[in-house]
Image 1 (cartoon, rainbow, N blue to C red):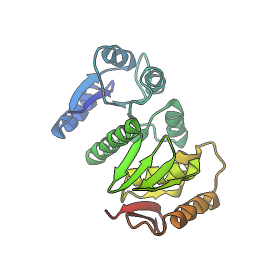
Image 2 (cartoon, one colour):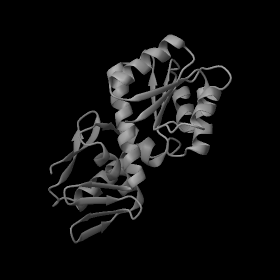
Image 3 (cartoon, rainbow, N blue to C red):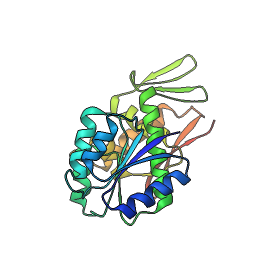
Image 4 (cartoon, rainbow, N blue to C red):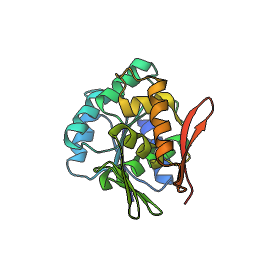
Length: 224
């Protein structure tokens, strides 16, 4: 069972989030601020951290930076009342994996946590496998039986991202931020070029397809 640490200074919110997570099969731990969270993690393995930003003693931004120093691959979900784009940007720059604003939809929070845990498992394995298709993150290759295709870095990361979350729609902005970085000046044309190259390379592969969702973005569909 996955172990989740909830770091939240409001007692009622902390208890509610723990109750929701326990109901969905997770083991929960809690801390009232960043310092208490770091102390707890010195003695307890944690699979994922859910944390608030506005907390006494050590805020969520600093806690995220500290977690990244010692637990580099730990999935982190910020859940906060801070809704301004600059706050979200600061959260991602500090190292969070995902960001939700309060009031939180409980079902969405659980779905996001499950997605983060799935991605963390894929990242630790560095391979994504379905049917006879294998994506090797370290080698930047896509293989099927004896056929091996080496991809340019950005193309591979884009395909790996889409296939890691089959049927999930990613907006153009999400993909550009994740693959090229929030500071990049990448535009729609660059993303379109990469998507079209991937479609051309794997046109004869029946195991998956990259689908355009009009007005929204892209998703990958596995067919095995």
